[in-house]
Image (cartoon, rainbow, N blue to C red; front, side, top):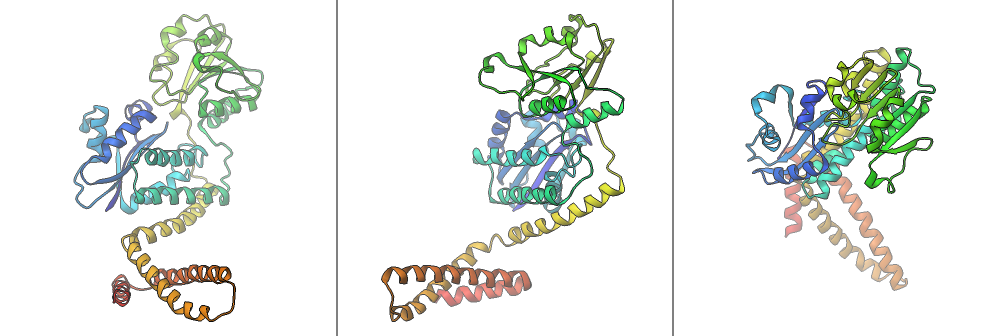
Length: 409
């Protein structure tokens, strides 16, 4: 059995290239179901965000397929045209990548808060449609555990937690003031709400668009106004800045639509969606500045950040060791559990003779027996897994075989 992944991200491909391999929830489910039917594949997970898309697979030894070939088939693309943009990782390299990724150490916005939720959601979706397996379950859950420890134990000096925060910081450094500015956020999903709150906290007046058919079913952040999505172009001339972050397959703002609006002041547009929400050619229009998700980067080479990266690395190393201990011994776990059950039963039979002679109520005797069985199981577990961790593999296997022979008689 093996662990493999293939991924494309902001460091290797532009947003236009990445968007060709992004997955909606519905498309991800379909792709996972197809992946699970591939010969030799035990389970899969798809992680698709604004900055990256990764396909993870747990495979048997007879797996001879190609994850890149699978992805290109699913998206109707030619392999050779896109091979240069992808990275493939296997086993330890893949495991280390996921742990660092979940902790935000590989994010475009270093240590950002959203990636850990995105990793959890990717696993939850695969689990929901029965496309994961125990290896990917334990790997992703352990990576999330490590990420939570990094979040609580390592204080990165940067305060930004998302792309919109980085965008706001960038504009402030260009002497742009948000105080009193009129801003529109197109999209009321999770990222849209984050954007609205961030702009409101920066001092702007914020209006959020809501799809008309959902207008009575959604909430908007406190202090923000709402308009129907269809009213966005009528409202746009009032705006100093607009952010678009939807899951729409079509542009929310096009060059043609913007040419039809009568603007009297300069406008900043920020497109945080993948695929793009705003047609790139709008930047050809006078008085308009367009930024996309790739426009905001940080310098992670400062001594303070390097020190914190090292601290995070030590935390993750301990968590990875926990995973490797499980991963390397997972085939033996059923055998160990059988030995434990036989040993506890042996103990139970021996102690029962003594307990029968001990004066006490039947209920108390039954409860005592259960407590002693549980304690005995923990002791046996501790001894067996302790042996596994301290002996060479061959020596440990001899011990397991000996115990199986002992209790098999």
